Image (tube, rainbow, N blue to C red; front, top):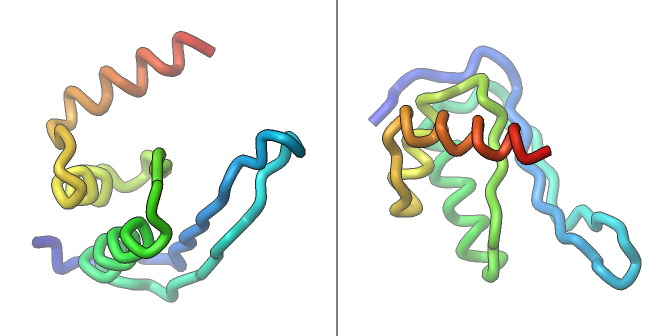
Length: 94
């Protein structure tokens, strides 16, 4: 478990794609003031359970430790090399 804290504020946003209206609807937004990693991971995990039918999670790449921990928590492949390969593959497709 990581005991470190974020040096800055951390934002969490939940949105849904409204296909018929071709727009994004923000369902939830919160700013956490310098939280620790466990708080962030637990908060995101609780939100995914509460919201249900979560199909995608997006995280910026500035905190690889958070990404790896979150992947472990949701039972996905958490090897950093695998994650980087997937990002590179998706980047090439656009």
